[in-house]
Image (cartoon, rainbow, N blue to C red):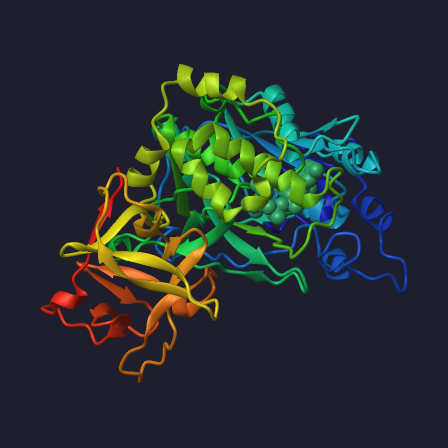
Length: 514
Ligand code: UD2
Ligand code: MN
């Protein structure tokens, strides 16, 4: 293995084989791209380039693994991997440190090659000059493709049976690769990620990330790190054991090349950045594989607060296009929750997904419902009660009674007419979410103070943000959410009142139309 003791000047030859490294001049490579005096060090890369440039490409970093990791042993014939790094205008110092950390901290036999895919950066030499380092190859796109198509391009030429993807501003840590290769060697359908440590974007300090996190998301397909569920945490006695994760962050993972190809690589119609991690994650789980985080593997990454590069179609539209393609292909009937959470995606163009859907069918993948039940039960489906029907008490029904001379909408009780299936319009109600409505008018408790003993209930123009109009069903009673009081049929008027389970006047039957 290449130790950290190899200083940069030694890389004029391969430290193990002694092969001349075609004369890579590290100093010249780095100094050609130094910041100009007075230049904002964050401007080009959205991290502090000045701090990055100061550090050695071979700087040592702290071993952040759990103390029981170093004594783990791995198979002696682990397969070699092709490392694929795509980049668009990466800082030279971070790009070089990524490459060198891989060479310095991985047994040489495990690295088949490092494939850099230069996604049409301004200076072709950022990539080309690095091919003077042994094992480093460079592919350059002749137009901007985005990270998704760039990764596929790299994967297609990869010579090894295992693919390892990295972002272009990483530093791999001690023994980072072996535990991941081990998992994939044992079962080629596993797609594995390390714990992603944090390299500070301000001072480039290498910071250990929590070992209790996994990947999650909300219905808008926004990625987030989340705590592993409590039940799992309690039963986790072995801190070296992999953590099942519903999704991966996306940038750093190991996958069997044949499995990657079998699953359909990536969706090549996704542009620039974003969403591909959900698409790959759903596909892996639903089509017979699994995703896991291997805690004994640690890789540092510079997390940024903004994109340092431009999106030809704009950042928001690109994210919508990519996530919308994901939702349309993989989320079945649950895609409605995506659209509810991200209404701006409704009606937006997203190209054709016909071939992706066809592939899903061919592979006989499971449903999104299966994924929710088996992989991510913590993601709850938003409860939305939509109940068109009548609201009945004895022989009487809740009904709207027109307007008085002051223009108030009147609410009262009347003998139920017609049937539950075809009530008169005045007795037909819609219970949606928390509103009880009829043609734009909603039931409202006019006073909602907790201290108030009750308040008349009338009709108002609906406003979903109005607390006076929020109700929920609680058994056979209808409870006003804010005050906690119950809807009661008082003589002469409807009102809220202290809930009493045995009060007949508070018992309501909600009979649906259908
Ligand atoms: C995270 C992932 C990233 C990707 C992304 C969602 C990690 C550590 N990072 O965002 O890999 O999955 O989520 O899409 O999990 N790049 C190109 N061409 C482009 C744009 C970017 O090659 O047009 C490169 C870029 O130089 C970098 C990589 O793609 O090496 C990821 O981009 P990022 O670092 O801006 O994404 P990040 O870490 O915010
Ligand atoms: Mn990144």
